[in-house]
Amino acid sequence: MTATVNLGITHISASQSQKEVTMNAALDKLDALLNRGVVDKDLNTPPGSPTNGAVYIVGSVPTGVWVGHALDIAYYLNAAWY
Image (cartoon, rainbow, N blue to C red; front, top):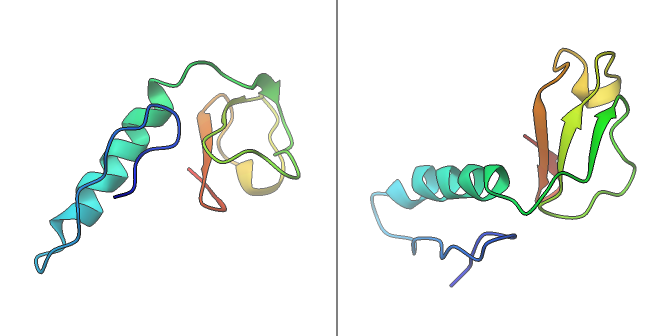
């Protein structure tokens, strides 16, 4: 079984209805929000090689994939930003 990166919340196993996809995504968001801490705040440029599960508070003038997300919470999971 897989689990969330920071808190180790167990993901739901796969089944025919695939409801686990939605639930596991929600568990990943919960894991990011209840994370032990933010790596950096006021960062405008996404880091080049972030750690899986890392959480950032985007700065006021974001660049790259963070454009349009000023002052949002960004977390990195499985090679994607959320």
